[in-house]
Amino acid sequence: MSLDVSPALLEKAARDEVDEREFVDCVRVSLPYAWELISSLVARAEVDGTDFADNHVPPPSEQARGQLLRALASDAIRGALERHFGVRLAFQNCHRVAVFRPSSANKKRYERFTSVREQLLNQSDELRDC
Image (cartoon, rainbow, N blue to C red; front, side):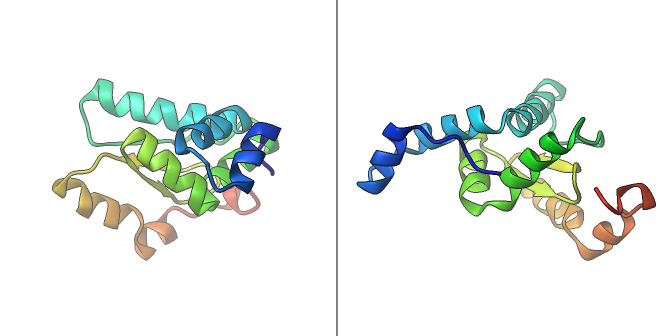
């Protein structure tokens, strides 16, 4: 899945003049499902007053799943989203995304969420081909 990059942004990239805000906006427009999911997790953590929020609902379509995978599999996109939202993102499977606000207490929670043990415990037959 490719980003929808405007000719103007491509031109800036060719001149090595990319502004990260423009890149983040390109991601927002190109990957609306991924953007909305991550935005909603950040908002939920803020409203709940917590440093953590995660998603357990599978994407509504293969296209949405592809957007999520694209956003989290790309180091550039993932890093830009983390900086934009001020969170650390973690990803366990085709839909289990979590946001972690920076804090010393959250470091252990992040390490636990991304551990081999949690990855194994998060497996299910329903998600085998997601």
